[in-house]
Image 1 (cartoon, rainbow, N blue to C red):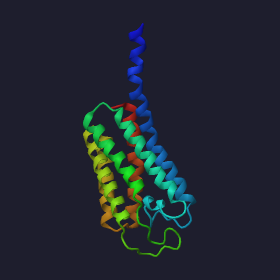
Image 2: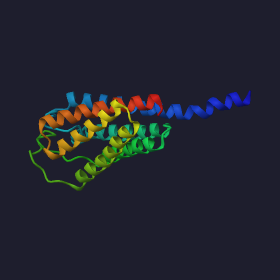
Image 3: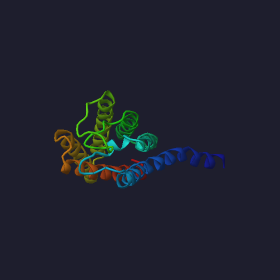
Image 4: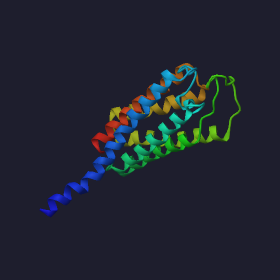
Length: 195
């Protein structure tokens, strides 16, 4: 009897961790979409979601990044495959770091901000944290080795590079936003399956 009770308890923390991870993507995307439609002056064809961390309500997006990142790290602890777990945990850590270091404002957001602003240390560290996390995510996508995973990883990597290389051209911003939503769905799938 004692063995049958102990067994489910040993499995439960992993399952609970994966549920926490599965919530991370929908939470991040949902909160960000609410911000996109409610924040004055935000334009998806001109601004990256990270810029929502600026202004009086910027703390909401920063908290969204940190909480989502912590949930991803927790979810990664529940995964079976070591290198997938490490890649996804790195992505979560990148989200947390990006939440602590605010992206630079610009292109008129928040309202009243000039079109061009000086690059700050915070902005550089935001980009570095995000970039390191994105490498972890793309690597994990390719390690899972399914078509959905490879497509997700490829699109995420290519659209991030395109956004950076074009200086945030409208098509690149929209493509990267779609890739973020796709990656969030992929993460939830990985956590539910418990790879």
